[in-house]
Length: 225
Image 1 (cartoon, rainbow, N blue to C red):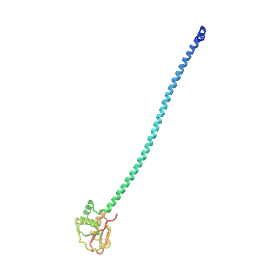
Image 2: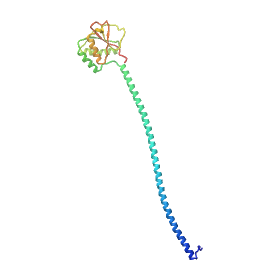
Image 3: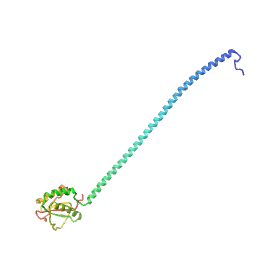
Image 4: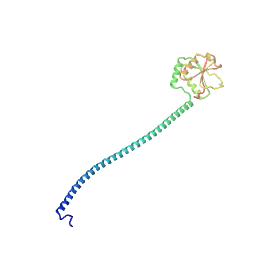
């Protein structure tokens, strides 16, 4: 096969120059394309990194939101548990108070060691008085009357003989019984003050069957409160 212009030097020269120039142009285009290829390739990498960074940031933001949501739920649950615990503690304290009141209400009266020593010390300063101790016809009143009698005897007071007397109507609490409250014996006033110093209220009560100049300590039923 014979190429065009193969036999003519002028044609061959022209064709040679054409391809030579074309090669140079193609080489230039190659360089340009490679340059643009490099630029766009670099831009692609930059955009890819930026996109990856945005994805990472978005993931971090989502993680923060999820962490905040979980924290909020945790705090809400802890608040609920704390409220329930406080309510349970309050209920427990109220129950304990009610049980303490019931125990106090159902337990017999008794002098504590401190109250006994304090009462004993005050009564010893006024030894020599004679007193009759009476009590309501029940075991609780009898036991408390015996404790008070023991203190009186230890303080140097004398227990008088208990006269027979029918109790028409029982009373609650402690009373110092005299013939006339306006002419109460000195010992009755002393005993009343000594009992008051340890929180025992013993108001005066008049009974004409009590001999003038004498006094009695009556231990009635335990108060309800």
